[in-house]
Image (cartoon, rainbow, N blue to C red; front, side, top):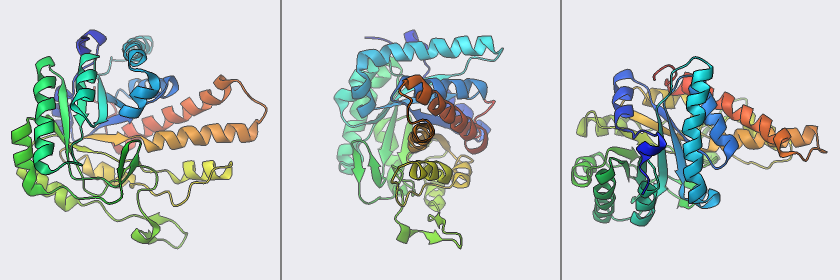
Length: 335
């Protein structure tokens, strides 16, 4: 058993109190390799932003759970060293399981030093979702680990999480769910979606210059949920903006992304003015990393040193995370 406190992480409880008071959200950024992790830490230290390092079930399998433990330890040390060298404050960092789908997976993450876990029982019946979430909460809270639950279903594809259609969160269910499970935060469905193809073209409005504009998020549902559970931390999954420039770079350098449409950043910023405390961003990181690598090989096809193409990819990620912290989430300078 390894406590998250031994590794130097914090749970999300105090983070979310500050976000609601300050009207901003913490970026929950997924990582699968060292370059992504480095980029997140550099960007968040330099913008002085609290951050949630997210690990999915697939990433945990890809990186190996033992290696992840040492990556986590190294992440905290890197953060401290970077902050000291630049004369900046150390930033709060949580290590979070994204879309845990079983009690056993959540238990394993708690035991290996995660400071926060998500149990996604949204594919179960309402009653079974409550039962599973409550079981995870009862275990995690023994070790002061915070738990995120989910009500409603997001459409799209993110690793093992697949749903063809979204089902909006029902505001009338949230009080019962929160009170019976004891969760610390709640992921809701108000129109965000997993993956890079969040909307079909026929769902969007096409502008004169050929840009697809997706339907607006259901802020009415968000407002009603806030009325039902005032002051309770809300989470938005599937909140990548799918930048047109990243998609263009991918496609102009041999890629084949079709109909890639994301959530407009101004809508995410609007959501952070409410009880939305945590915003999950994964696809944007994948897109910018892929765009930088594809462009590098297009410009320099003879290169085979991984440092030469992963270096520019890491820098593209740093720039993207800084932008999100400063202009979308409002988390910059909030340590």
